[in-house]
Image (cartoon, rainbow, N blue to C red):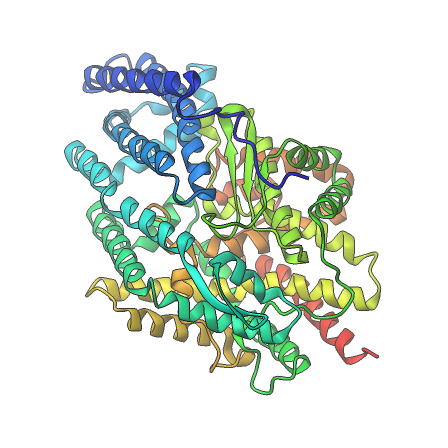
Length: 593
């Protein structure tokens, strides 16, 4: 079964008539759009006509550029040294920055309208875009002058975007020196990272030590990239009038501080429960001072087999079908039609992602599959993102962009479906292995994410004053891990370089890309309880909820499912489900023969 994706549904090559034709069409359309906006958005007359024309032009250009950019973006993610892909990506990023001028002009135009509600209600097309238009008006309060906005957008291409691209190249081309079967080898970082799941404890420790040592080669360059990106973020955030990058992230996430506080309070209360899990796992593996970092992903139990890619497909599709045929058919189609690139190889970036391709109503998923249950769950997770894209694809492209916290909801819901379905049929020994794998993931999304949240908060605080050295970044990371993992981990074996490993820190437009994962897990757990209580009516409500995520704030869209996200109790109820799994895990260990 082919483990590499097909991109022919987008374009066959950069030289193809289709790609070059779309490129020319976009260039001409963008030029015309800029001229039209410059001519029409400086006076407040005929607002309904102008808003309608602006939206129609924006929809057409957004659809076109998202298709054009997806192609080089996806190619470069599996071929880090593909110079042509990088060239076109760079060219399109420069072109994309030109959207800034008409966007700023439109925001300023719409901010002057006192009767926006009346205008919106004057046509079905504008009513369809009500949320987008009202959000645009809110964004206007943080706008700078037109010249400043255009300049910032252009400067980002040689600032945060360039730093981000550099770090991506550094990490995807990094080769790790490691001894395998007595022979020295150089292996790609994702391959060595996957050794954390190996059954052999010596391989896990050796891979961890080799990984940490390899980061020395790119530590100073990565620190420079991180300082450059976060420095830019602080400068622009302050210029816009935000109190902090966190406040700006909450605004962009359509989340309020009350919701974030509810999540953090719930997590902090339940951290000791996770520490108990880590200590018990450490004891089982023969460690006396807590679990060393290199054994966080150590497989427990003998019942979990490795999966072939075909077996993973069947496993996922069968379990998705316990929820709905629509979800199962979507996943099966993704495997069948090569929407997934799962093969680890040189030049391919690590981790996993899903890229929803709105213009062709498809998705593409990147993963690094080595056969572990965790890899299978990762595929289920990314297919959840794709299913979210399926549910939202009938909306206008302007209503298809959902905030980070809701982006993780469908993906983690799909993880829960797969994990719970298989647990119900498992023997005690199988349950131990499956539960442990599930708790590994929950620990990452709650405990490790909390450590990353603490790290980024402290990073921004210090970056206000100075650029941070490699040693300072390592120190902050270690302290953050100690606060999050407590006595669950052996403090002599932590991961000081996690700030290099996680690409999320290097997105200039996406800061604090951590708490959304925790929100997604806990929100999904709560939704899963709702599903169990009302399977008959839930699926349609759930699909409608996913469809609505691009045109509501988090508080309002949660209300569609009857959930109050301002209540720490809601998140605690979800954490109680994980606590039950931890108690069951410990019970299975203590009653193991």
